[in-house]
Length: 102
Image (cartoon, rainbow, N blue to C red; front, side, top):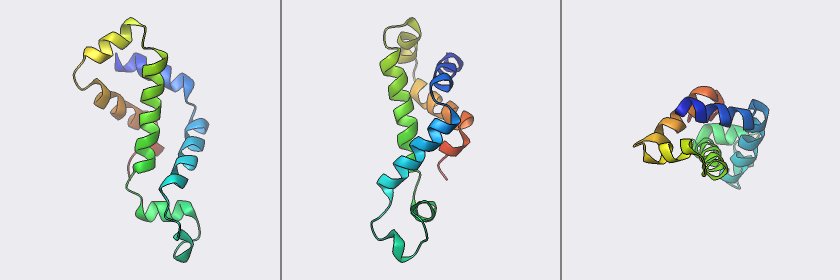
C-alpha cells in the first residue's frame, strides 16, 4: 500500500520541486536576526533548525495525497491502517534524502 502511495507522490513531487519547496519553507523558520552570526538564512537554519521545514514539507506532501486521492479504495485502506501516516512519512524520508530531519 505505501509503495503505491509513494509512486503517486514521486510522480507529483520531483526532486527539483521538493528542493524549491524546502528552500521556501526554510525562510519561515529563520529568526530575523540571522545576519548577526551567519552569512545566509540556510546556514542559520542548518545551525539552529530542528527539522521544522522538512517536517512541514512531508506534511504538505501527505495532505496533497490525502486530498487528491480521498475517493479511491487505496485511500480507504490507508485510513484504516494503523500507523499508515507514520509509515508514509518514513517512506518519504527514504525517497527524499533532503527531507530527513538533521
